[in-house]
Image 1: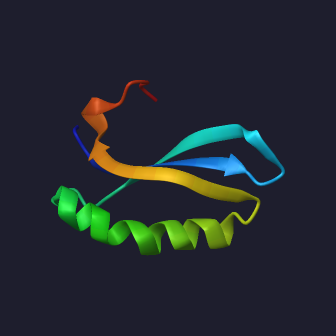
Image 2: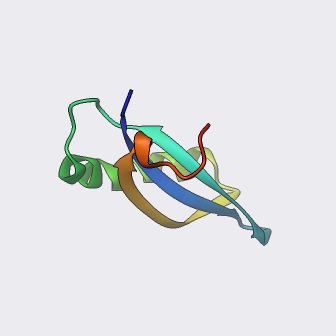
Length: 70
């Protein structure tokens, strides 16, 4: 299934070399524009729940475009 995802890279606050990508599925019928509009509050909630990490970049894309399959 080709889902729209919010993809963001987070790095540990105590170790800037320790980074990882996070993928959060967005509503199945959402457009890229609606994903981008939902991104800020979604990432703010994620950071509030994970204060030891900081977001360094983000974008919206379809799961079929992933370089590395989960």
